[in-house]
Length: 314
Image 1: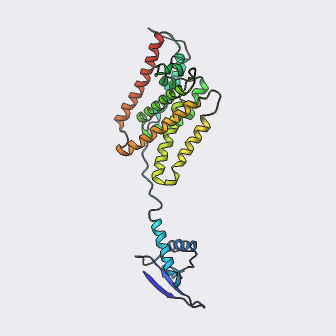
Image 2: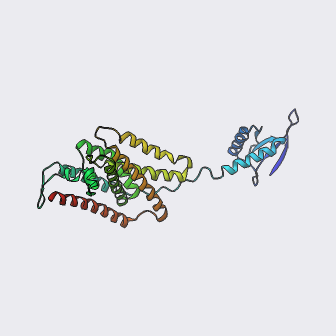
Image 3: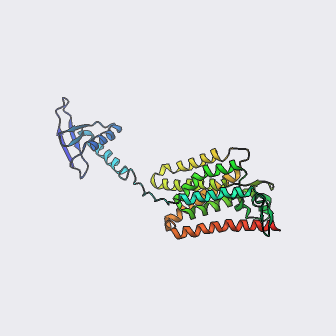
């Protein structure tokens, strides 16, 4: 809709009111925004207000270019800002997650005593469960799982329970306990397996930190994929944050197993991608599937320790 307004300028300039179809008028915000657009393109303009409506005016000779620039601006920003996807409801499972972490601390105390079981004799759980690279290469694959439940000392345990516990709680609330612990167990075990093959045969490793950094990797990739759906230019922010955490927390200390941390993070990132793809296609796992996954994870840990104890009884 076009209109021409004669303006009594001393130079006789004729000004036109600029409106885009099917507009009949502008409000103050629209007029100011469009004036900024035209100013950015060096097109002279002015805003007038008659008490009820606002008008954007440009010299008659600039009317066509002004209208074109405003149409381009409208087209480029028609769907901006993008709508934010609905926030996923979190699982209320903090207490069960903390219970598992307490169980891990309790098991550490058991490893400190001289344990004797009927039919097995005196057992050194740390020796039976450590991720010894040579033994893993020789077929004792269960060590990749049992090592996740062992810790070198109290400081090692507390660091994993406090710092790592934060990430694990967040992940369990995001995915559900069964799915989260299954992914952590698989990522940590695969990280230990790969680490055993790249390290020297006498390399030994214990600790849940491989699974902790798997949690960081999973959170990193699922956050990156969700950011990708919202703002295309921000997907790398969670990835950069995850790598920064890996560098900050996973490389300090003389006894730090950098390889285990790196591989745990990598497998976690990979499983995070798979989880987001499957969730987008089939939906989030329900309560029953989460329960089955949790039982499967617990069964895997029990089976791994059963294999270790059987070795100790020979």
